[in-house]
Image (tube, rainbow, N blue to C red; front, top):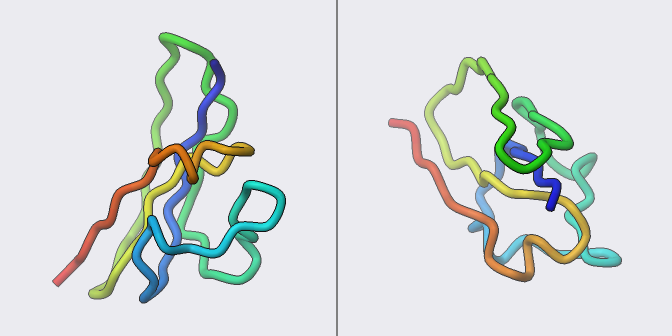
Length: 76
């Protein structure tokens, strides 16, 4: 199954992000970077400069956020 890794700057917890048709509308947030369409056993690299704040890390393919493919990151 293909996945992706998206980092969004937001005050909203990752599991609470609103969904439209099973995905988060990324344009509603500051996207800090993304590794898209990772095939099984594949790897990717993402380099991002994160300032202090809260970030939601999600797999934003249809249905993946609602299945819990999310986590939160706080930078201090």
